[in-house]
Image (cartoon, rainbow, N blue to C red):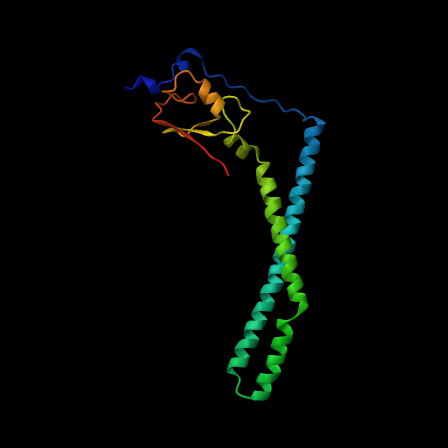
Length: 179
């Protein structure tokens, strides 16, 4: 049996389970929650507007394809000429250009809003925060266990042969470079 993987602290310290009490949050946290809900609501409203525009633009494109198909398969020149006029009129319809431009702006806003909302997810933030100092962003990766730490905390670790998070034998310590 490999004793380096066994956590001897379990023999000394009994497992303690603490049940959390129901408490009221301070007002600044209540305000933060309300603000976050407003932003989520605004994001969903913007996403809904974008989806409506995409449906309108898709319908227009489908109509254009039907007219183009009719032009290519119609036998009489008079009808084909009339359909070409309708096609050209619809092709250069300024309303469709405006809708497309507006959809592009809304898509950009949705993308930016989604990123902000995802970045406020504390669970995601914790994945990139050093588990030793719980302050700095991680930049060091421990192989093979995958734990991550900031460079300063990793430099203070006395025994660099074992991971400070799980005591697994370290094969290598790798630097993480963020973009």
